[in-house]
Length: 570
Image (cartoon, rainbow, N blue to C red; front, side):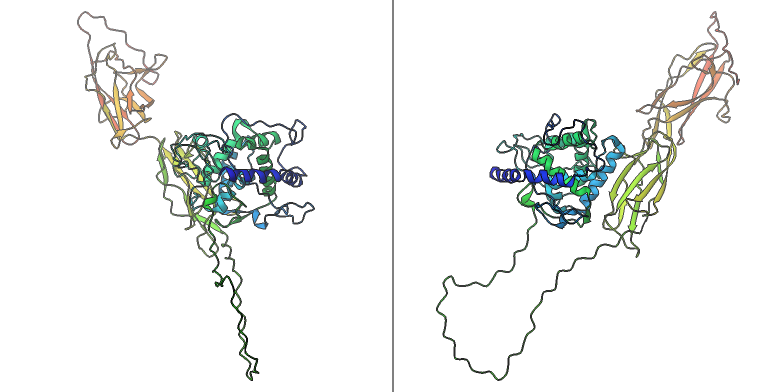
């Protein structure tokens, strides 16, 4: 492996000047959206220091192939540089969708970074050849792991095992893993679950692309600024040649690219990460065997005229390979059977918004990028705290949004689904968040609650709320001193609460149970009326409890307390 790396470095060294020329040729007019460095120094003279910490890849090897000088939309050039073929502009569909989703996710959470998806494409090209030409499944996971060399200090960094072999299968040293070549210890910090499958998988292009984007944006970088851009790339792999190579692909992809089917992307030239994972090409049929030493040639018989010429056989022609027709474009999306979207505050919606993409014939269209967006005055979010997510449709043309979590704000809002980069009507789903509910309220103890006229109840009233047998947290409870079981009107006499100003209150709202479903009521006071009174507690969901409060006359000789001032509504 060390010898392999040496060949790669020597090859890279011979192409350094070529790479610099490629960057100069591709960016002669300064790429749009990139702010020149303010130092005034040229790229060659500016010393850029990567951020502290372990680089993403452990500075493991990478592909040094350069893009063709014929840019995707501008054929022809005056500089003689290596050309790797027109197919280099094509990026496998799922890989391309992952880069664009990462750009959109970060644009929503960190717009100041200005991360372009073409930068992720350039790094993905250099690190793994776009996941070995897009050899990924429908969820974006590589068919088999893409592993870099063992980082044992022989030609590479020396990084001891940090994941017990969980990602790279090596319990002695780390290896870079996946299409963006994260070493396990860096993945432990930056790993993401971008496809909402509950896993942070470095071998999944959606997860890896978002993780790479967040790493590049770290430290408040603005990737529209040349100095920040260089720092970010060098932080990924601290090599000047790496910086030049990534920048050359970055400029190339910004000038145009196109989507190709998964598994048909151009493979890099030479060895590199995951080379053993490269697809095998069937060998042609073997040629007929021949003796190593030819024998003596027989003497041909004398030629005799043949009165009948032999029949002629038309030459066998091999039909040219046919290119499968491009899939029909999506013409509409529709609700794929999503039921009502309802949840109590703080809960998870049982249904997920699901749409189906179809072409003009009503057939499903797969790998259509669909954007789901939470719209309206709500604190509901998709899993991961996101309000926007982009996912691709599957083979049946359907795609579901990630789990939708309700916040504390009740009311209605909308989840909108639209096709990315297409002017097609979207689908809107109405969602409703209701109050937290409790179907039962019980006393936390069974002590009798008594007080004397003009006094206060010594025991604190505690209750527990539950829903379907489980503790109901955050449930709003209303406490009212009522006339009787048959008459739920507020009682104008008897026990009462006080507000902060000492005003008498016989109805309290805004009470909420704690995380364990327990609610402790404020202190209860008695006026000068003797008798047995009722305190009723009610909650959304049907939970209700009546509590008896008994008021007696003070003991003989005791001085009665003055009667409380009536509330304005009494």
